[in-house]
Length: 418
Image (tube, rainbow, N blue to C red; front, side, top):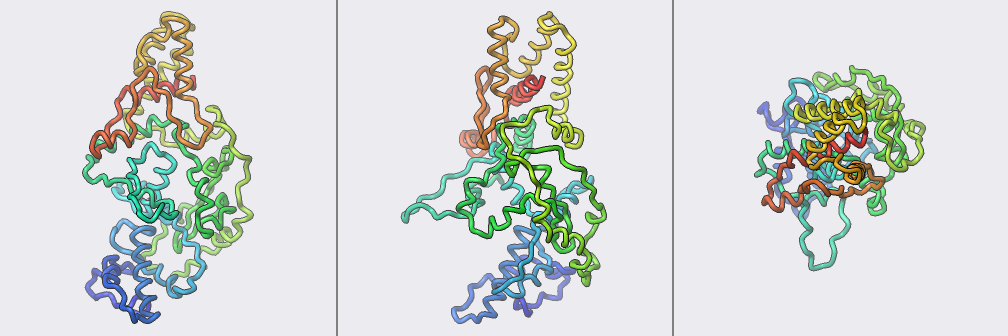
């Protein structure tokens, strides 16, 4: 009543534990404020709006329709709120994403919208077509928050989920280094408000992120290329698994400032924990020490088809190393690989054809040194429809990439490694 202007109904539904229905907050602000509203009424109205925004966009849980009242205390003084580091990244990183990775989990919570924007900005080949901005009679639109441009992405409710899943899996399986935009925001920093870049000097600090009961380790040393720095083999991480088992049940009176004091002290010394590395120049070699560390710990395949294809290709590449170069058997294995890749023809028919094919394969698979996405050559194989053109031709429906095209990307990449 003091902070929101209403008391939740005693119906065991509106307020369950310390989580309130977001719809009840929206009900409180459904009507506009009167013109003669007092400052206290305006502040209660604002708290309802902000609390609903926090629960619906940033600190979502798997209930899908509730928000925890622990955030309300941070909104007590609306005119001069406390300078609290909200730890938005820690919320989906610890409680929700880790819970979603459990074997029997069927849902995931957290700021999934931020994760989607992150993917669309750095992996633009995954982003659907973006509608052009509407016209304006008063000149160009003012510079807006970066995420506003994604608002013009058409909804996908009419798109068959199975088709989209197959399409995106194929795109991820056949992804090439030159399709990644490592630093998508560099051109925008000068236009952003000061508070957006105020902590830029500590973005690479190895510190714990704290959000009330949650503590999530932040390890930018594992993704230094996102900060324009050379990536090296990261240090081993020792993490207390008990932190991932903490929840808010039965802990109404818990003082998290005292409970997590060591982690808060570490956060406060973040300026001394910044990662240092030289700028990244060019692309990393395929035998880089980082890859030697990464391959055994990553999830190599995302579906069975890509696993079978990759293992078949690797076995044939191994055969190439065992067979004498130029022998009938060696040429036969190479012909199989190029036929599977959809390039067609016999790469060993003439020396000129071999050199040309090898050059085209190297051009296709060679990593780009630019941060912007680069269009790969398509000579000798069928063109791949981009998400935008697929959507345009299919009237809002994503087309599934052809198996030959997807296989071609994977094979030429592996042949380049060999």
